[in-house]
Image 1 (tube, rainbow, N blue to C red):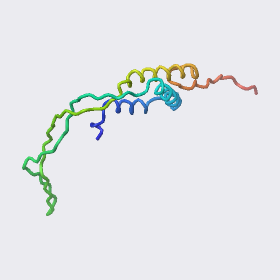
Image 2 (image 1 turned 180 degrees about the horizontal axis):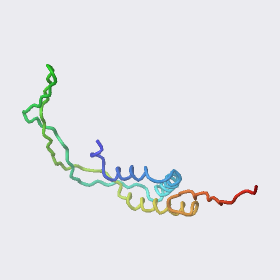
Image 3 (image 1 turned 180 degrees about the vertical axis):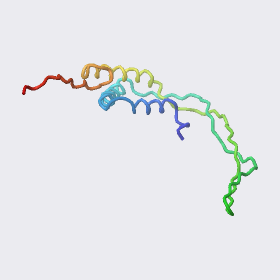
Length: 130
């Protein structure tokens, strides 16, 4: 089923799984803001896809141990190209750029870096007397 998903949805899923929890929180706030400013506008386009089918070859493969033998039919996989109509968000690329920029800016202000990584606590290394 994953190969049937548009590449953009897979990319979103991968990007959403990256970063610190703080970055994801900032990105989520920015996404809400920029989805209002640049709302989805849907269009349609013709795309080429491929579906895979298994075709029996007529042969069998048998495996046995002792007096038990199991036979299975052999298959070959064939790809069938087809054309389909896909609905997509025309504004997505522009909105995603703004969301990323917004998250980086918010992280830089709050954490001093673009990834929203909390600063490491420094150890002074001083010894207490006696």
